[in-house]
Image (cartoon, rainbow, N blue to C red; front, side, top):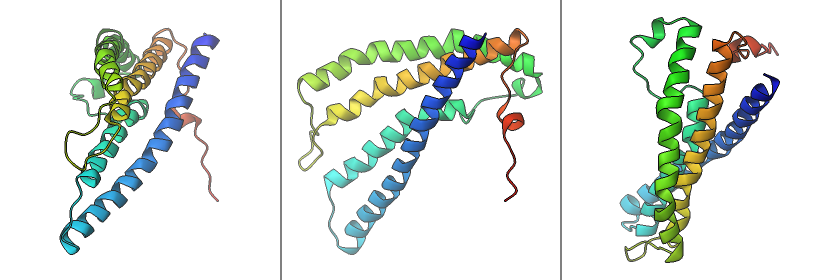
Length: 182
């Protein structure tokens, strides 16, 4: 059981760090959008590269931040029944959902994106628009990277649920957090 706890802890740590780094991209995105709005409406000048940069940054936030959001249970869920379940019932739903949906779906996306990303790298894909950004292949590489992180977090969540089902749950974030009154 200790090895499972270490695996879960390591994956959580990885996605915590990636999530922290990705969170700074939202600040960068705000700055880029403000710059775009200023140049477009005040200076009456627009740049395709800046507009593409906005959606590139957004894509990175979405793709690389999805695993952290999963870790923090921040994804939207229809919990008509889930919210009424006991911790063990929730663990069973999460365990089955991880094994049947999340892990296979992540593997499918990683597998099917390999050729898509490889082709983009092979041709050194750039924006088709005049004045657009170069190196679009770097952005496309974030697809399998993001889903590897989601896959890892899905494995961690499934293992966490398994531990709860066998009666050895990991401490919850709320019970393990120390309250600092400084």
